[in-house]
Length: 205
Image (cartoon, rainbow, N blue to C red; front, top):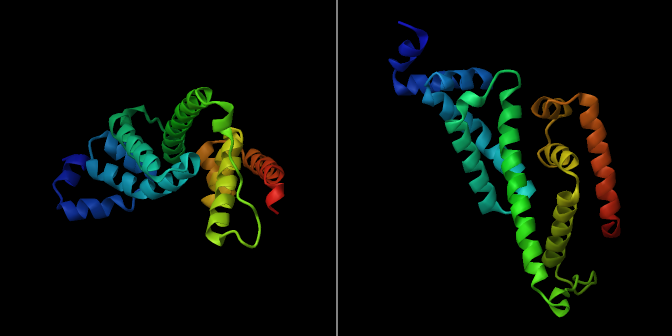
């Protein structure tokens, strides 16, 4: 009896418990061989971190959930596309990131179309005044939106590392492994991204 056949003969609870001790790469290999419990464990490990990651790209919870769901569907339908020349985390984050970038490009095209249909008087807006009479929650919301907008304006390779390091609080080593770039490059991109954010948000200090 081969290992996979033996595993399938075990009680479901035992098979699920066994998947927890495997590395990501071991799990995807098992899933590629037909073990759907391995798929379930990968979804469990990555659903929340990916949701947090994608939300900081699109800044919309429902859209972020849809993108993560699409990511998991691609994991299921494209499992054989994964080759162990990169870490599984690199592969799954790349899928989610590409889907998020596609959504942002779609949103940008829609916004451009909408703006082109507006007259000059329709494009006027006011920034909430920063005075004692401004409600604190409104002001905090305004600041949060400014920060999110500044993050969105970063070049993609800066935006990604800023989200991973300063929002998700991943270590430099984790980011390096996920993105498959040298540690020095990660640190350089983070420093550059932070400088650009500081310049963009200097009026908030």
